[in-house]
Picture 1: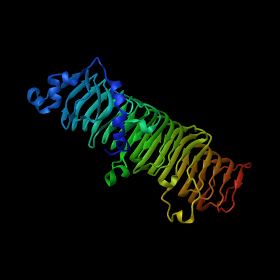
Picture 2: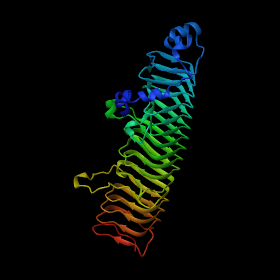
Picture 3: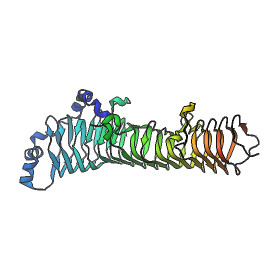
Picture 4: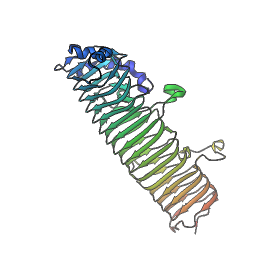
Length: 416
């Protein structure tokens, strides 16, 4: 019970009742009518005694109105079953089991899951279902998740407090969770979120997830909630609006092969690399990051759309807010096209542009150890007002005679 969504369980218990009614399928028999199968689910020791390790298959059953609590379910295959309830379904462990073409509604727990697959299953409305801490090898494949509306307080949530993998799934108005490791591959989401752990949820022993998103289409707004990660990797993905604001990543962030609208990467991380991607922009918002919150920021082989690429503090800094030794060792753009760069109020040991094409560059009010502009062009305007550097390397910077230059209060010497 570690994430934000756990805290609205009580409200969901009431709100979910209409969903339970809608989920009920009159063509299915209640699990109570399944004789020995029902007995084996209620009493795994009896099942072991009578059938040993043989797989138990449960098909076309409705699970509702009956409590399954505290037992260990192992080697079970559920086919075309409906699960509905408010806390009734809560085994202690679920191991080596598979759900095929099943539907889920309500507030459900499957305990600690291990080697569990959900294939072509669906969750609707405000349904909430999690595997508990220690879960691993839990796969959701070709599943569908649909919340009731765009209000995030009404969204359902699925995943585990351990490891979870989503492959070829579709989701809208829903949250996905893998508190230790979360992999999302070949999925299509619209207005969805990742729900992670945090100090506020679990105290000093909170979990930090290693998140991988690969070959996905993320439409609408995609957000990370709670925002405490071990690492974040996003590859070969179409993104409309990615919101990482306030996220803290212990290790590295890597983004590559993206076709994006707007990325708000106002986060802290060890190293942040974005490469071989196009970010077109939405309403003049393109890409935002507080580069000073990273040890290293690198943008390589990037095309940015028209609108500001923001890498500075985003506001004026007071004198006491400047560091003696900046935490950012280098902020670098290599082989990039940037119509507009806003690096104002940036603090870094090194700001580097290598083989870049920039139209408008605001590098004002910065404190920079070394400024390098190499084989790069700033064609229309450069603002260096009040920027102080300890060292500069501008020898191969292209000279643009028609460029507007603001140099009041700076010690930077542009080539003539």
